[in-house]
Length: 277
Length: 285
Image (cartoon, rainbow over all chains, first blue to last red; front, side, top):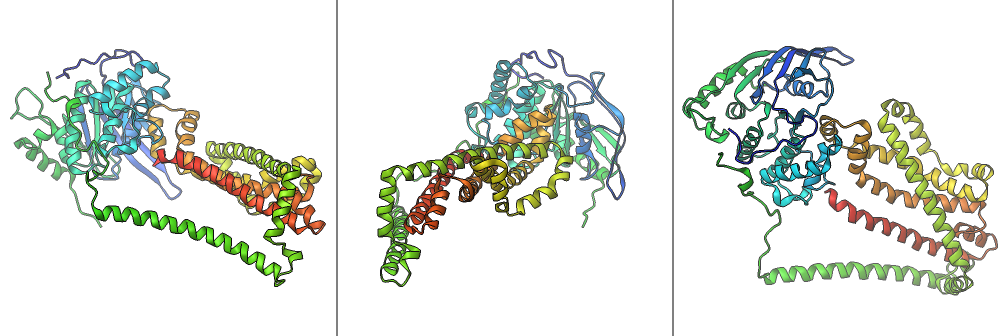
């Protein structure tokens, strides 16, 4: 299912490459404090197929965001390896795009300049980057705001710009770290549909980290449950919606389907949530 | 074909502005008038306060409640002011002080930002230098006036004093600004592959512009203090020289004239920077 507008894949970094397989191979992470040595992640192995949407869920502190930082190459694992398209990731790579919990738009740059940040850092062809950024911003419904500053935008609009910024460098894989957690509940439902639509249209592989079970089920093809610290893979669930044969329902639609509740109950039990405090 | 293109999705809230009523109510007009009246009252009271001080000064000196030899008085300062203005002396001295302040201020800003950047770059350097900076900042730099005069000579010791007084606080304020940058903005740039130099030039420095402007505002005053103190000791021109010279020959008219000009000068420089700050910072909110 491709978007109506066929995206020409611009040259640069990962020229013309289709989305690639991500392999997380036996990754562990320990970190040190003066008081103790802490094992945050233990022996995580996971393969994400090209174009697949996978979510990682687990309780806070289980290391899911840490795992994303490792995949993004900004945190080296203590053991194990990340490979994208067979090549190990050792530093931040233009093949991997990262969308953080908040937009972190730079107040001193216009919307368009914000969207072009990655291209500028990676010293890409700026004319091409500009065209692509404008195209993506238009696709995200932000075409009328190119030359405005972030302060004029609402939270949902800012996160749309952040999505365009992530995609302007044309990564193969997009990492989403609770990308909607700062938004109000109506906005997050609306924006989930748009984000999924844009990402599927662009043919990206996606790893979504969330603690929102509903978000994981409605947005992704596979839900991976992490255990409490040290984070291990507890179980995996393939998400399918036989009640809409032949197509994947949009997130908002998915929430109303009977399968949604079944998955929700299963995952709820898996997560073994206790109210703490 | 996918039917729902996000491009066509209308924003829920395109306009963040409040909608103004087309026909303002009488209450609104009254409120506006009251606002204007209030700001006029404030301005008028300021003028009255200033005039009252001048009148009091004049009256107390004329009636010899205060010794006019020691305090001078406005109607005596005015002819001296005109005289000094006429001879060109006042312009020359004011210009000398202004120029020295700008030079000292610029050196201190450049040096301060450079050192702050170095401390940001190297956590080790920061840890090592932190206690020294705190002590250097707390130390009364005026103690160095005679030494600077010996080391740097009469002209450069004035600049030296301006820099010495303002540079340490600049380093500390600017560095705190650098550290106050949201670490997630740094993380974002890192995920896009930014080098340390790119972090500095594309995230940390532009993100610190409000702090830099705040530092400028503090600095211009401090640099002026340094220049005046330096001129007391060593210069043959400048408002500091005029003050010290006037007091030595007991011409309080000259001293008071210089002080008034100094007050105006510092006010003008401060306002210039405050204006600049206002124009720039609006973007950062």
